[in-house]
Length: 190
Length: 191
Ligand code: HEM
Ligand code: HEM
Image 1 (cartoon, each protein chain N blue to C red):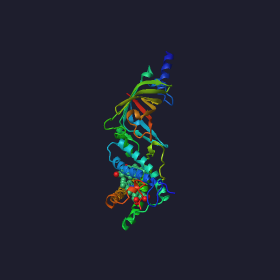
Image 2: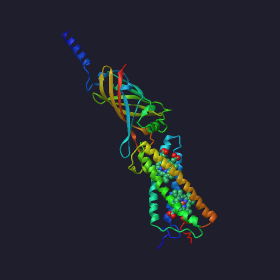
Image 3: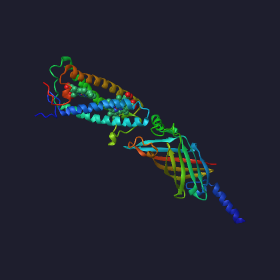
Image 4: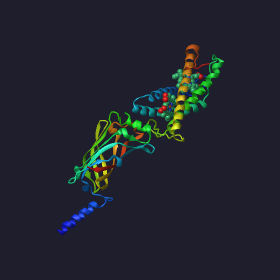
């Protein structure tokens, strides 16, 4: 029995679709927020935006774990036959890289706040105390994780840009159903 | 004549005697200026999950005047220079000096002017007054305990809680408590 909640071998279900777009929105939003918050002159706004960035980051970590579990427990829709060999090989690698960045970014952010000598607690959306990762605090470790987080953010966005370009190419140039099947499950593709 | 001499001797002996623990406030009448070298103004702010942020102001000035006939008319005034805040963490100090908290560039002074002093015991008093920071003034209460009095020097231990939201400094709540705990040792030198 197949409902449109789960994936089939030909299309994405609502579960994967909603997670994809929710995460895509927050992920790109996190990049924008991160970029802006470290460049503000108002220290007050900067502090508050960094806390917001941490809150959404932890939310993202939870959603991504859910997404990976969902992905492992679901079928993976095959690409349309029209897709060439090179892309057929590249797409899973690109998706794997996207999963890796989705996990590594929040984790490196979490590590960064955990090792900071400033010891600012994490209180996501003012709801609960998120404990720190068990890592030793030092200024050196903070610089390391800040740099790692920075590189991951920029590299991650570069891959996201490629990913978006690929999606747009499928839709406007190749005119296959690859973009639309990530929008609604009804556009079944064979 | 004999009794007068005896009485004088007793008073002299009292004055010469080093003051130990408890000293009566009434004996301390006079004007004092706060000596920063032997005083300290420390503060701490709790944070969620335990622990907190603590620091001190290195620069401040002030005066204490104790009225002999009526302790209630005594006065305590002090001015803190927030630029001198120190927590042991340079980045936190910079944050506290910035517009996020003290805005020390535009509001270089935090002032306290007492409005009333109420004696609560032989050696303690409740000091109410107007605290002004970042252009906002509010009434605050501090408890003062006389810690020592000798050779023209008076020492008070002053504690109190101040809500930072009243002064537009509530950044970081509720991660960091709105309540700032003050712990001051104010040593005044007569004159
Ligand atoms: C997908 C999730 C995330 C993305 C895309 C992201 C992205 C970014 C970006 C672009 C910056 C600015 C880097 C710069 O230009 O200097 C940044 C900074 C930062 N991020 Fe994230 N971040 C994510 C998750 C997290 C999480 C979960 C935390 C913590 C719990 C976190 C904590 C921080 C902190 C503290 C900074 C400031 C670093 C600094 O002061 O240099 N981030 N992030
Ligand atoms: C807003 C622009 C985006 C567009 C237009 C877009 C489009 C798509 C499309 C059409 C697919 C389906 C590919 C297929 O059928 O094989 C897809 C899959 C995927 N997207 Fe995006 N995406 C966007 C943003 C993102 C972001 C920001 C991320 C993560 C950081 C992301 C991660 C993924 C992953 C991991 C998959 C593979 C899903 C799976 O099969 O498990 N996407 N995306």
